Image (cartoon, rainbow, N blue to C red; front, top):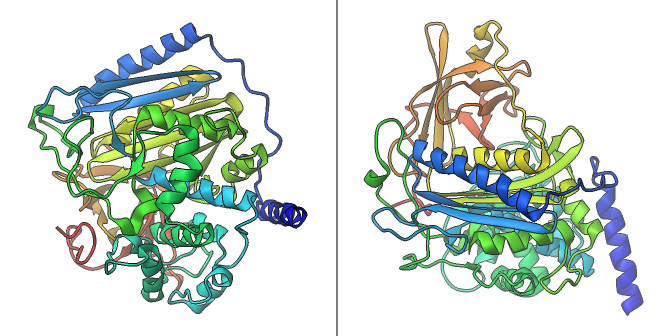
Length: 502
C-alpha cells in the first residue's frame, strides 16, 4: 500500500509540473545576507520613513516584519484604534484578508504530496454533482484552475450568504449553478473569489474536515502560529486588535477617523477569514521559504514550494499567477506575493526566495494599499538591492484613450473615465470603504496600451481595455477585477444580499 501511494504521488507531481508552462528554473544561489546589526539598521531606516508616510496618508498605524537569511525584524507603529492609546505591536491582531488564500493553496499542495489530491483532476471527477451555469466550464474546470483565476465566471459569489446549518462550503458550491459566466472558460484572467470558495470545499472534501480545521492542523499548529485563527465574531476583541479605519483624502486629521468593523462570514472562509499578527506571519513566511515546521522538520518539499510559487498562467500587466500567488519577475528573479483587502484593513506578504527574503505589512486603513506598496518596495530595495520599476505615461496622442470613456460597473466598486477637454479623468466609487473615495484623477496611456493614473492616491495604477465575448471593447480590467460597461451613474449599484448589504 505504501509503495502504491508513493507511486501515486510521483505520478501526481509529474503531471503537476507538466502543466506549468513558465515553471521556475533551478534556483539561483541566495545572495549574501547582512549581519544582524546591518539588517537592523536597514530595517530601522525604512521604519523611520514609514512613520512619516502614515502621517502623510492619515493612517493610524501598521505593523511590519522582514526576513533576510537567518535574521528577522519586526515593528509596530501608531495606535490600534483611534481614540485610544493602545500601541500597534508585532503581536497586534489584524485581519489578513485574501492572504488567507495562500494558506488554502498550501494545504492543497500538502494533500497533493500526501497522494490525497490530484490538482489536475476535474472538479466533477471529485464532486460529480457540482455545476456552474456554463456547461463547458463545468466540464473543463480542474482543481488547479480554481487557483489560477482564469475560470471566467462571476468573481464574488462567495460573499453571498447561504442558509445556516450543514456544510457551508458545500452550499456555496451548490449555488454555483446560477453564477454568470462573464468570459468563456480559460480565456482571460480576472481575480476570482468564487473559484477560491469552490476550492475551499474541494480541499475540505478531500481532507475530510472543515477548512478551518485543516489549516489549523496542517499549518497553524506545526508552525507555532498560536495567535492566528479563523474568526467570524460579530464584534472585535476589546484589546490587542487593529480596528478598521476609513480613508481621509485631502484635509483632515487622524483624530477625525471613526473606527469600524465588518465581520467576515463563513461562506468566504478560506478567501479571507484569517486573523493574525506580524509575529505569526513571519513564521508562515519562513515556512514558505524553506518548507520547515517550527521544529525544523520538512513540512513541504522544496519541489512543492517551487511548484506553488512558479509562474503558471499569465495574469495582468505582464505578471503571472502561481498556485494562488501573484508572481512578479524582477529581471530573472521570481517574487511571489499576495495582498489582502477587507473593509478598513489591508495586508501584504511578499517572498523573494532567491534572496531568502520576505516582507509582511499589515495596515488597518482603507488607504493601506498605498502604504504597503511603498513600505514593501523600500524593504525589498534595502535588503536585496532590487528596485521596483513601473510603467510610465507614453506621452503620445491622448485620443487613444477614447475607447475607455464610459461608466464600468463592478460587484461592489464602479469606475468611470470621462473626457474633459483634452484630458481624461478617472473616477472611482466603492462600497467597500467608509468615508470618501479618491478625488477624480488624470489619466494617460502607456506604451503598452494600458491607461495609467498619474496623480492622487491611485498614482501609478494601471487599467486595461478588453473585448467582451462579442468582440466589443466593453470591459476594463482594473485592480484585478473586470468592470463591465454599463448604464447609470458611477455611484449606482446594489449590494442586496451580500455581506456588505448593511
